[in-house]
Length: 117
Length: 241
Ligand code: SF4
Ligand code: SF4
Ligand code: FES
Image 1: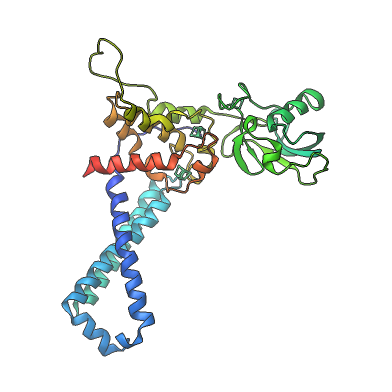
Image 2: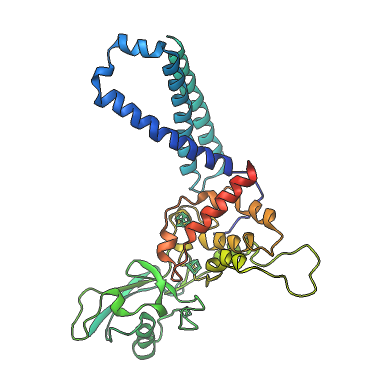
């Protein structure tokens, strides 16, 4: 149970701030999403109506922001939880790699889907 | 009244693992937990080992877990724990354990080595670089107000050992050391702000705090530790952007 000090390794502050900013965005986006998609069926769940939304430039911008910030928030949150546990550095690097690669893959998938229409 | 104290016992020289021992005693609702521990040690079982010094909530040496909560044994009456009827025989025991997450030296005595290392890491002393003024380095009442609450800390470790982040990562700096960092970072006379911010802005430093507030609940001095940690986070963000 030795205590390791601590080289200065800057910095967690930007990640911490971004996590909060993206979190606030997601609160509004998620509430909006639920109201729109689950409580007001007339907004349309059919294929044609979804395509119409995706073709609208404002909706497209919203979806791209949602995908980017949602993914970043979620994956940064997972990484932050993992870092609460003591890990061997090989394990930390592997887990970090999995998070970055899967995040990038999901982002490409999401963005390419949104841009198709 | 009659109460039973169920006390965590462990002597690493003779016991292969810890156990709990019950002591049924006659006590007064106005007795403090430390009084009944003294009674057991002096009258029933001299092998019981615990720390204490001032007996008045000043030295911070008798932090322990009482009925599941970290507190000072000298600052809690039995009636505050719900044992308030002088004529009753209580069935529910008062469970007394050492502070959690620390190595145990014997019974209720834990090893503070790591706690002090974390404390030392934040440089818990005033650092000045400018030449000393003719008289003392003055502070305004507002300057003092800013660090007043943080200065009340008696280093009992009740906060750090109640923090889930410390339980999952023993290298986490912990609330007591962070509070001490605040005490000097926000001291208007101190001139090592950046140095100290660098020390807490590390993977095992301040970012392991997830604002869970256990530390605040545990602090016998009622210091709002999480508020102070949040001020440090704000200061780090301001420095970075
Ligand atoms: S607020 Fe932070 S330091 Fe306090 S118990 Fe929670 S995680 Fe630990
Ligand atoms: S902040 Fe409170 S609980 Fe923590 S060491 Fe200081 S006095 Fe004890
Ligand atoms: S004995 Fe000093 S604080 Fe309790």
